[in-house]
Length: 293
Image 1 (cartoon, rainbow, N blue to C red):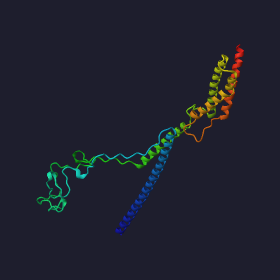
Image 2: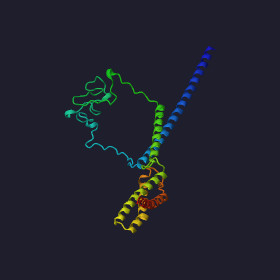
Image 3: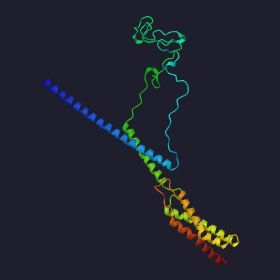
Image 4: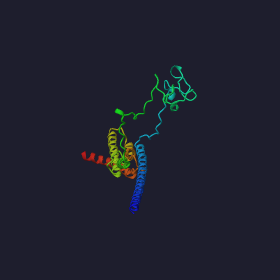
């Protein structure tokens, strides 16, 4: 009876361990699926960020990134295993043209590990002769001092690495949004609204035209410009020049680096300002001149 109870307890313990192993395997599989899904999501996210950065670079005038070309192969003969000094293939001569004993089958004696140790002229492993090159261990495979191998590098947790990558991606998104906001602001008066910027540009061009009008009035007073030419420039020439100057300035320096379509230049507002400011300035100049007289 005691044997049966012990057997039943052992069976229950084995069944419990099996169920625990199945639960652990299911949890590990679910963890791996989550890690793969997170890695794929980060891959797509980083790809989209790279494309957006390329668009920002092209918007500010940077050349598009090219495909890296593979490094050219070094010129000259390629040395392989046959180029090792002192080494020869089966049947070839060794250093000085002397044949190597036990180089392979057909030399009269079995070669390599097939040869029985202790037989004359036959060894399990060939000895390195004078002038021959010893085989070097690959980098990192050299034993440490005392014949003890060095410590293995600690394995990184993929969950921690994915979390760090996600944080860096969030930081990249934040800086990318700031760059986009800066790219949507023009170089000329970036803190001003589009209407205020257009008003300031057209008003400045009209002020320059008013100064030129005063110069032409003074030139007319000394007989350099006749009255018809002065009137044509005041009524049409100078207002048109100031309007087109403001229009070009807004198109060159008032345009953001990244904008969908053509930004508004407020043509009607500029036309009104330029074609009204210059004649009004001329009338104000005449009134001021009469008052001062």
